[in-house]
Image (cartoon, rainbow, N blue to C red; front, side, top):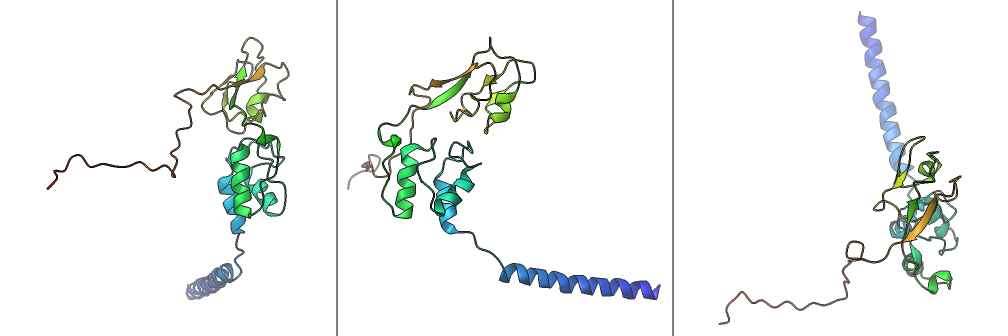
Length: 191
């Protein structure tokens, strides 16, 4: 009984020593992430669509930080290119994005042609398509980012991209911080 107690105490002491060494090594040998990659990744739209040729926004941010083109993010458009160029201190390159901002699009499935193969569901990076095997699929427009990744795998060509016309529900209502709105206090009495 006494031998087991001594062995357990030795194992506990050894575990404490090794745990302390691992904790010390994790602090001293820590590899810091490149802060520019994090800033670029924060600018990207995070749709993970793969239209840039990378599997997601983080790998594309790493590639941009290492010198890749900043004009590959189609969902982000011109606005993202301008922000990344400003962050990196380079001139905004001339691209096809300069001509006009494309209208936002959403996928539409012609349900009469859909055979329920689920290839579009597997291709959608944001899970905007619902349906099961051998049943009709449909797109949830509020979730669709318009990346067009679901169009190519469809064997019946039943998926098309429809422009979203601006309306009150989908208008970009972001506040312009440069806008100055005067505030007048009408509740207090003048003395």
